[in-house]
Length: 214
Image 1 (cartoon, one colour):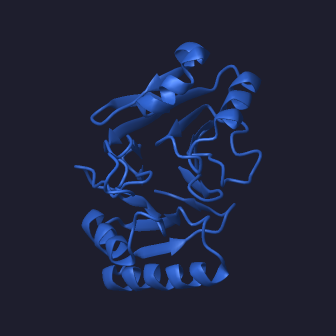
Image 2 (tube, helix red, strand yellow; image 1 turned 180 degrees about the vertical axis):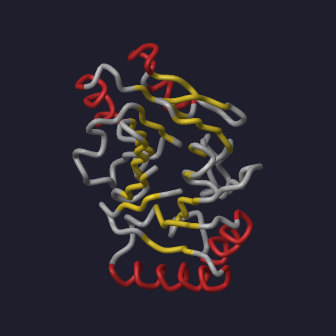
């Protein structure tokens, strides 16, 4: 399987002739992010993960494209029919030839006075976990973690704690589209420190960069 990091929180996973895309939102500038995809997974409704117009256009252009998402996102696209399906914590699905286990229920807290929105994390083929905007720890091993690099809902200390608790063999940074060059440098230093502590490969992929996974 190959993992390609696109802008912000978006990744493409390809295996044989099948492709999954996760979270092609409003901070993902690549206009071809969904080109050739068999299915798209959306973790939650925030604009940087969910671009409704882009998804509608992609599904109109590709009648084979399926979408799996939190129930809020699925409801917004319900008029598209059976190609849109809600996914929730505990689901075990086969999507475009990939085995997908669903973990997590809530977005991390932003405003303590406002209940969190739903957030759905996806573990693909028992290899790659994309948590969306949550620090969810699956109940099974995670060899490759899509690691949030920065967010309004996360402190640097929480990033260290999260990657330590998940203990992946590899972690590749996502959710970095709100950083300028200085912020990226600071974030990369902390991710590198976490990697040195664990003796593992934790790093930021540049947009468009790919890695081959076992």
